[in-house]
Image (cartoon, rainbow, N blue to C red; front, side, top):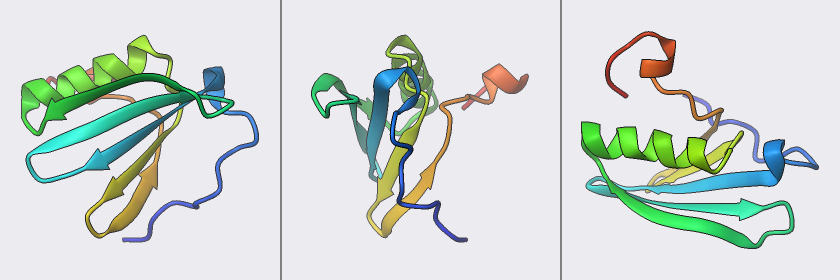
Length: 91
């Protein structure tokens, strides 16, 4: 699997970017605005309920792009769509 480009657009969608520190048991999430100022921060558990809360948190803050870092390094940038948004019932 190849990770996404490490280059973000000059202007983030909705002027916010989300960063997720993805761990085994829980995930730290931070939303920053286009100037790099923290807008919101949360922790979610790595459970179905926690991942649903993550999707809701990203949506509430209008995060149009997400940078994910896992213990093995940066992995992906993608819109925060859930499986529920695509017709599934769980994230």
